[in-house]
Amino acid sequence: MSSVIQTLDRQLVSNYQSNITVPNWMLRAMEDVMHYYVDKNLRLDTMSADVMPAPIAGKKYMLYAHVPFCHTLCSYCTFHRFLFKEDKARRYFVALRKEMDMVKALGYDFESMYIGGGTTTVLEDELARTIEHAKTLFPSIKEVSCESDPQHLDSPGFKQLKGLVDRMSIGVQSFNDDILRMTERLDKFGSGQETFDKIMAAKELFPIINVDLIFGFRGQTDEVIQHDLDMASRLDPRQITTYPLMVTHQTRKSVKATLAAPHADMANQYRMILNTLVGQYNQLSAWAFGKANNEGFDEYVIDYDEYLGVGSGSFSFLNDTLYVNTFSLRNYEERIKNGKMGVEQQKNYSKKDVMQYRFLLGMFSGRLSRKYFRDTFGVNLDTALLKEMTSMKLIGALKNDPENPEELIVTDNGKMMGLLMMKEFYSGMDNVRAQLRKPLKPCDM
Image (tube, rainbow, N blue to C red; front, side, top):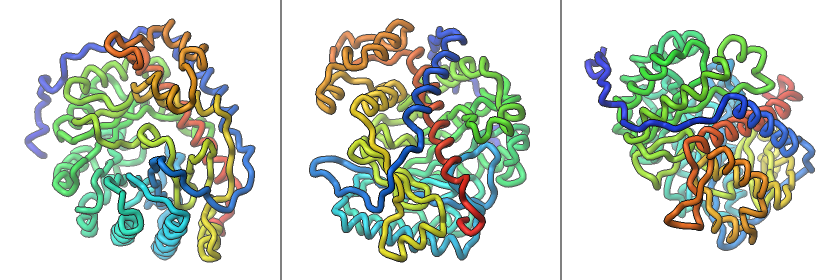
């Protein structure tokens, strides 16, 4: 056992005392409100599409690439993924690079690239080749973010990513072996101690390491939560992300009764997270914490209003329109082979819809700006979103910045609301993924 973990130094805990006073009934009401808007705006009433629009001069864009393969499938995960088969995965990476060529032909350049999954590191050589290709096509890329699970951190090929990936996000979920056993991760990825040691060894490979934790599991007592936070703090990563467990329509039956903690536990666990991490880290969003304020993190939609996705099951948001790539591996490969992009569907959103979406992101990120809404939409935020602004101010989630009237301060109550709102939004997106995957046949996988 690493001696660094044998005792828990309580000095790791900051002196911050969170001030979350929102009652549980109000949290449940916010979930109901978000259910309404998510069901309204994420319905699959899309139109067909064959190609992405060309870029608009002066806009900044982020490139998202999806790798839909995992060696094992976690029961609580609803991301678009398939069981790994090497021949299919190698063909897929070839198609992914060809789709990037098509994006280049449209005239795009990107400031940042995010690679998600699935497990992006199932084939490190193909991943490295794909990142190199992207950097050649899009020379403005300044940062590449990537995800991995603990299993691959000590694989022989993992070091190929050094110098290519700037930020590696590692899905730990918990350092507690009982939680890992309950979520079927202990046998797959090893104990919490083994994961700790692998991350410690991998820190030298990347400028930024992010440790992903999940709270809201059944059996995660205060002691378990605190131990997870202390273990993460001892690793001293540049970033720590603390996601709430997300129960979707797809996982409600299998997860809610067996894995999810009671709803009332969430606010208390979130208080512990704030009290432990604020002071050690800057808060980048409701659930992301970093050593610096100007680093990218998992929720790239905060830093980039517009992003383009390549790969099966990826989403793009361009010109107030959501574009959806085919979820069928077979269709994706055939489309690329025939010179078509992977996109199959599109859905247009109204100005009001987009403003509400940006308001959600502002609450979640703690970056709510009157100037942003005036410059982007030509509106007065206080009147254009009167209901949203009034309700958030009444519950003490927002207050005016006394030093800058253009900015709003998101309080701890606001962070709690932002966390809930984003959780419900992501759960809604997972429901969309589930609906798009439902028609798939074995030949599509």
